[in-house]
Length: 144
Image 1 (cartoon, rainbow, N blue to C red):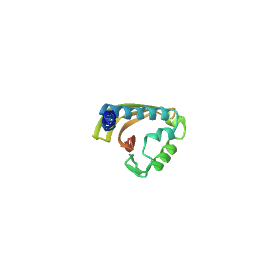
Image 2 (image 1 turned 90 degrees about the vertical axis):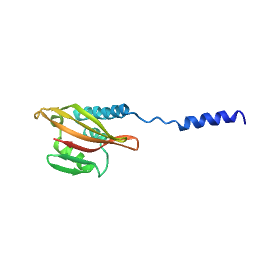
Image 3 (image 1 turned 180 degrees about the horizontal axis):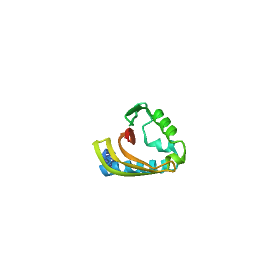
């Protein structure tokens, strides 16, 4: 019994210790998603670009004064509006701000710049990331 008690106590201490991600960890994870999106977009891989978005009918996208809802609708719109590499071009971001909303949500504001054969484009965006089942996903996107 004397040898079992210390082992049980050690197991209890280790099982109770959980490391909660810090804000710096969260921001790094979000920046990583944005980096992967930038790369995918610049390779005209819209499906890979959309991996950062919540695959749900609840996804909201606001652009051009219009709100659209749903992952599949957003994906279809991107594919229709950016059908070729000439349309997607090369994407660059300038992140102006990443702000914590709650333990499991951040909003990101910034600018995007597309260098394209069909004409360059740029604008601003605000996206909302939410941690869902341990993964960061975009649940709302407003781009203009």
